[in-house]
View 1 (tube, rainbow, N blue to C red):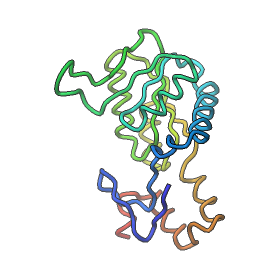
View 2 (view 1 turned 45 degrees about the horizontal axis):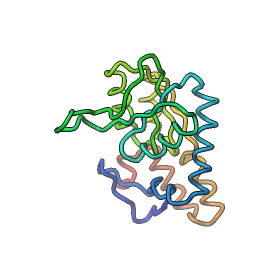
View 3 (view 1 turned 90 degrees about the horizontal axis):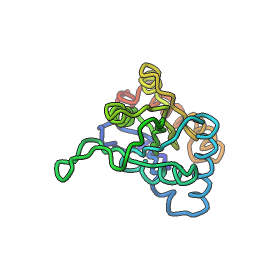
Length: 194
């Protein structure tokens, strides 16, 4: 996780962000990877006990989803943003098991659009989606609203609301920067221009 409220990062969507969360790097550290696997398993067991299959969202959700499927000893598949243009032209890789409720796994949730598109692909393929589990969320109000409107339960291991006080306590950000990041949470599209 990198914080840079004075020189923001640009996301693929064009949104300028004071924070960049790269959960892929966590996979490089065995102790952290084991902790994440255990945490995902505990949360999935508590919040989604009906899950009989895991679907990772390509690409960053694949590794974390695989860790969880392994911990739960359940089938796994992953969902591409769109069908391949060659071969079997699959959007879902792996075998969906009929009758199993699928828990979708993401590394992080920003706007939620790509995550919900993955859930749609699974639903269109006949799966039952019991919810979504992610490592981190920016916790934008508009994103929470999207999940609520779709009636898809979203649980994350942590979020920006919990990260900010720790970052301030550890001296990674100052009070003025905290205000800027709070404005970002409320208006991710317009905060940098305000």
